[in-house]
Image (cartoon, rainbow, N blue to C red):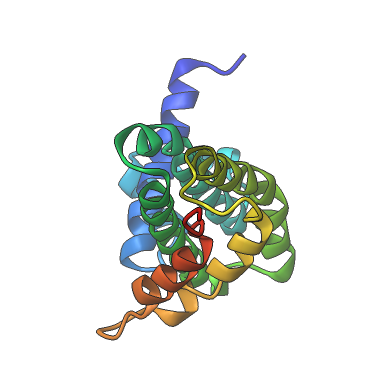
Length: 180
Protein backbone atom coordinates (compact mmCIF):
# COMPACT_ATOMS: atom_id res chain seq x y z
CA UNK A 1 0.00 0.00 0.00
CA UNK A 2 1.34 3.44 -0.97
CA UNK A 3 1.60 5.94 1.88
CA UNK A 4 -0.48 9.11 1.58
CA UNK A 5 2.63 11.35 1.57
CA UNK A 6 4.10 9.28 -1.28
CA UNK A 7 0.83 9.66 -3.25
CA UNK A 8 0.85 13.41 -2.57
CA UNK A 9 4.45 13.67 -3.75
CA UNK A 10 3.57 11.87 -6.97
CA UNK A 11 0.59 14.17 -7.56
CA UNK A 12 2.75 17.27 -6.92
CA UNK A 13 5.48 15.97 -9.24
CA UNK A 14 3.00 15.33 -12.06
CA UNK A 15 1.40 18.77 -11.60
CA UNK A 16 4.81 20.48 -11.58
CA UNK A 17 5.92 18.52 -14.64
CA UNK A 18 2.72 19.32 -16.55
CA UNK A 19 3.13 23.04 -15.83
CA UNK A 20 6.87 23.01 -16.52
CA UNK A 21 6.56 21.14 -19.82
CA UNK A 22 3.81 23.52 -20.92
CA UNK A 23 6.15 26.46 -20.32
CA UNK A 24 9.37 24.88 -21.60
CA UNK A 25 9.71 21.36 -22.98
CA UNK A 26 13.40 21.37 -22.03
CA UNK A 27 12.77 21.81 -18.29
CA UNK A 28 15.25 19.72 -16.30
CA UNK A 29 14.27 17.01 -13.85
CA UNK A 30 15.90 19.05 -11.05
CA UNK A 31 13.77 22.10 -11.92
CA UNK A 32 10.66 19.91 -11.81
CA UNK A 33 11.67 18.49 -8.41
CA UNK A 34 12.21 22.02 -7.07
CA UNK A 35 8.88 23.20 -8.44
CA UNK A 36 7.13 20.19 -6.86
CA UNK A 37 8.87 20.81 -3.52
CA UNK A 38 10.49 17.37 -3.43
CA UNK A 39 14.05 16.15 -3.49
CA UNK A 40 15.68 14.67 -6.58
CA UNK A 41 15.62 11.23 -4.93
CA UNK A 42 11.84 11.39 -4.51
CA UNK A 43 11.42 12.45 -8.13
CA UNK A 44 13.64 9.65 -9.47
CA UNK A 45 12.04 7.07 -7.16
CA UNK A 46 8.68 7.89 -8.78
CA UNK A 47 9.97 8.50 -12.32
CA UNK A 48 13.38 6.94 -12.95
CA UNK A 49 13.76 8.69 -16.31
CA UNK A 50 12.58 11.88 -17.97
CA UNK A 51 10.79 9.70 -20.50
CA UNK A 52 8.84 7.94 -17.73
CA UNK A 53 7.75 11.32 -16.37
CA UNK A 54 6.68 12.63 -19.80
CA UNK A 55 4.71 9.42 -20.40
CA UNK A 56 2.96 9.72 -17.03
CA UNK A 57 2.02 13.37 -17.69
CA UNK A 58 0.60 12.51 -21.10
CA UNK A 59 -1.25 9.44 -19.86
CA UNK A 60 -2.81 11.48 -17.02
CA UNK A 61 -3.91 14.10 -19.56
CA UNK A 62 -5.55 11.49 -21.77
CA UNK A 63 -7.34 9.99 -18.76
CA UNK A 64 -8.61 13.47 -17.83
CA UNK A 65 -9.97 13.98 -21.36
CA UNK A 66 -11.61 10.56 -21.43
CA UNK A 67 -13.28 11.24 -18.09
CA UNK A 68 -15.02 14.35 -19.51
CA UNK A 69 -17.25 12.36 -21.90
CA UNK A 70 -20.22 11.77 -19.54
CA UNK A 71 -20.36 15.43 -18.47
CA UNK A 72 -20.13 16.67 -22.07
CA UNK A 73 -22.95 14.35 -23.13
CA UNK A 74 -25.06 15.57 -20.20
CA UNK A 75 -24.50 19.21 -21.17
CA UNK A 76 -24.86 19.24 -24.96
CA UNK A 77 -26.00 17.28 -28.02
CA UNK A 78 -23.68 14.39 -28.98
CA UNK A 79 -22.23 16.08 -32.10
CA UNK A 80 -21.30 19.17 -30.05
CA UNK A 81 -19.93 17.00 -27.24
CA UNK A 82 -17.80 15.23 -29.85
CA UNK A 83 -16.57 18.60 -31.20
CA UNK A 84 -15.54 19.87 -27.75
CA UNK A 85 -14.00 16.56 -26.74
CA UNK A 86 -12.04 16.26 -29.99
CA UNK A 87 -10.58 19.76 -29.72
CA UNK A 88 -9.45 18.91 -26.18
CA UNK A 89 -7.83 15.73 -27.50
CA UNK A 90 -6.16 17.68 -30.33
CA UNK A 91 -4.64 20.06 -27.76
CA UNK A 92 -3.28 17.10 -25.80
CA UNK A 93 -1.83 15.62 -29.00
CA UNK A 94 -0.11 18.93 -29.73
CA UNK A 95 1.40 19.00 -26.26
CA UNK A 96 2.60 15.43 -26.66
CA UNK A 97 4.06 16.30 -30.03
CA UNK A 98 5.86 19.25 -28.43
CA UNK A 99 7.45 16.82 -26.00
CA UNK A 100 8.37 14.47 -28.82
CA UNK A 101 12.04 15.39 -28.68
CA UNK A 102 12.17 14.02 -25.14
CA UNK A 103 10.68 10.70 -26.22
CA UNK A 104 12.20 7.89 -28.20
CA UNK A 105 10.30 5.75 -30.70
CA UNK A 106 9.61 3.15 -28.01
CA UNK A 107 7.96 5.76 -25.79
CA UNK A 108 5.75 6.97 -28.61
CA UNK A 109 4.68 3.39 -29.20
CA UNK A 110 4.05 2.88 -25.47
CA UNK A 111 1.81 5.97 -25.38
CA UNK A 112 -0.15 4.71 -28.36
CA UNK A 113 -0.58 1.24 -26.84
CA UNK A 114 -1.63 2.56 -23.43
CA UNK A 115 -4.09 5.17 -24.68
CA UNK A 116 -5.56 3.76 -27.90
CA UNK A 117 -8.17 1.49 -26.29
CA UNK A 118 -9.46 4.07 -23.80
CA UNK A 119 -9.58 6.79 -26.48
CA UNK A 120 -11.48 4.49 -28.86
CA UNK A 121 -13.90 3.64 -26.02
CA UNK A 122 -14.54 7.35 -25.39
CA UNK A 123 -15.11 8.03 -29.10
CA UNK A 124 -17.43 5.02 -29.24
CA UNK A 125 -19.47 6.42 -26.35
CA UNK A 126 -19.79 9.79 -28.10
CA UNK A 127 -20.66 8.28 -31.48
CA UNK A 128 -23.15 5.83 -29.93
CA UNK A 129 -24.97 8.71 -28.21
CA UNK A 130 -25.32 10.43 -31.59
CA UNK A 131 -26.39 7.24 -33.32
CA UNK A 132 -29.01 6.71 -30.64
CA UNK A 133 -30.50 10.20 -31.05
CA UNK A 134 -30.23 10.01 -34.84
CA UNK A 135 -27.75 12.87 -35.25
CA UNK A 136 -24.77 10.70 -36.24
CA UNK A 137 -24.78 8.23 -39.10
CA UNK A 138 -25.05 4.57 -38.15
CA UNK A 139 -21.85 3.55 -39.95
CA UNK A 140 -19.60 6.02 -38.12
CA UNK A 141 -16.53 4.12 -36.94
CA UNK A 142 -14.43 5.25 -33.94
CA UNK A 143 -11.15 4.08 -35.49
CA UNK A 144 -11.86 6.01 -38.69
CA UNK A 145 -12.76 9.10 -36.67
CA UNK A 146 -9.54 8.89 -34.64
CA UNK A 147 -7.43 8.49 -37.74
CA UNK A 148 -9.10 11.49 -39.42
CA UNK A 149 -8.69 13.67 -36.36
CA UNK A 150 -5.03 12.71 -36.08
CA UNK A 151 -4.36 15.20 -38.87
CA UNK A 152 -5.89 18.06 -36.87
CA UNK A 153 -2.96 18.65 -34.53
CA UNK A 154 -0.65 18.98 -37.53
CA UNK A 155 -2.96 21.55 -39.16
CA UNK A 156 -2.79 23.92 -36.25
CA UNK A 157 -0.48 26.32 -34.57
CA UNK A 158 -0.13 29.99 -35.08
CA UNK A 159 -2.65 32.45 -36.39
CA UNK A 160 -3.96 30.17 -39.15
CA UNK A 161 -5.20 27.30 -36.97
CA UNK A 162 -7.16 25.26 -39.50
CA UNK A 163 -8.15 22.49 -37.08
CA UNK A 164 -11.63 23.88 -36.16
CA UNK A 165 -12.56 24.16 -39.85
CA UNK A 166 -11.18 20.72 -40.61
CA UNK A 167 -13.04 19.23 -37.64
CA UNK A 168 -16.26 20.88 -38.86
CA UNK A 169 -15.81 19.06 -42.19
CA UNK A 170 -15.26 15.73 -40.44
CA UNK A 171 -18.29 16.27 -38.20
CA UNK A 172 -20.45 17.27 -41.18
CA UNK A 173 -19.53 13.92 -42.74
CA UNK A 174 -20.70 12.15 -39.57
CA UNK A 175 -24.13 13.75 -39.53
CA UNK A 176 -27.01 11.42 -40.27
CA UNK A 177 -28.91 12.21 -43.43
CA UNK A 178 -32.46 13.40 -42.80
CA UNK A 179 -34.97 10.61 -43.15
CA UNK A 180 -37.27 10.85 -46.17
